[in-house]
Amino acid sequence: MNIILLSGGSGKRLWPLSNDIRSKQFIKIFRTDDGYESMVQRVYRQIKSVDPNATVTIATSKAQVSAIHNQLGEDVGVSVEPCRRDTFPAIALATAYLHDVMGVPEDESVVVCPVDPYVGDDYFEAIKRLCEQASTGEANLVLMGIEPTYPSEKYGYIIPASGAEIAEVNSFKEKPDAKTAEEYIAKGALWNGGVFAYKLSYVLNKAHELIGFTDYQDLFNRYDTLEKISFDYAVVEKEPKIQVMRFSGEWKDLGTWNTLTEAMDEPTIGEAVLNDNCENVHVLNELNVPVICMGLHDVVVSASPEGILVSDKEQSSYIKPYVDKIDQQVMFAEKSWGSFRVLDVEENSLTIKVTLNPGHGMYYHSHMRRDEIWNVIEGEGIVTLDGKKREVGVGDIIEMKAGTRHTVTAVTELKIIEVQLGSEISVHDKQKFGRE
Image (cartoon, rainbow, N blue to C red):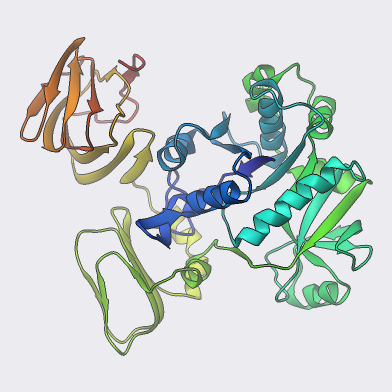
């Protein structure tokens, strides 16, 4: 089974735990035997439990690649969009990646789905059947239609020709008001969950027809010139040979704090205390300070280095315009090698806590407008300064003047307090030299 997971999102609706780099799918809120996992980790685990041999490719922006490798490892395929161009170019690029880079034959089926649904394993069993249905060639596209549980205004609707499990599609309807949604549901309409399957050759040919490119690399190089258009508008709504397969299992879109907290296994994550008069209160605390809630009802409290949110759950859905007004640097991010958390910001200094995973290292790099000081507080590693290597451990201090080429590789989990000193501290002041 070949699966393309679409991973996008700006991270505004789940502020302050999400940001432009750390979108909602990377927030670890689901309890496991040994800690917590994120939406993308949960979905990836579920896919592999249903089909251990599944080829998983994540279509995403450059900003999310490090977090994906941090959470899923280096083996997962990643189709990187050089810039945002909506879902048709993203799916065309990922399909070309499967064919030209991964060597997937044109007659094999591919399933596209969002990276962040909250579903049971039966959802991926259904996706496997969807993939098999696409292989029959009865239709060029096979969609998954979600059985509606209420007249939602958030989703588009698919009108099937019959009540059969697999049916022809009569029409598509845009996101309606609640009254119109009730009318659609009365006619047997299904939610459009953005899940569909096709033979690789179908989308590859469509992409060549609508874009005109030679191969994956050519499409990648020209990506910023492509028209921004959704897959639904470019392909789905123009395709006459299309089917829909019903799915009636659990399916939730955890796009707001209100819906996200419904999926939490416990009321608190992190250091938090709720008194007995609290009702329907959830706390997600990533700060190393306690949060105490007294007598609150229907409230979500979220605290991270980015900020603190205290909101009525229903009102939390309207957070985006307020977050848009906030202009601050990213205070926490996961990288392919580990993570960093900003501890202190001053006019001429920045203090960061860096955590490197065992066996991982930063790119060999230098800065022209700032000095850096590393203080190792946990673990062991190997530092390289201008080509010279040395072992470091707890208590070691490493000083790097502007222009010094440097990197560090973790032998065990390595934690470093990094102090940046300079009058122009910027993420753009970095020259990479590859891995040392």
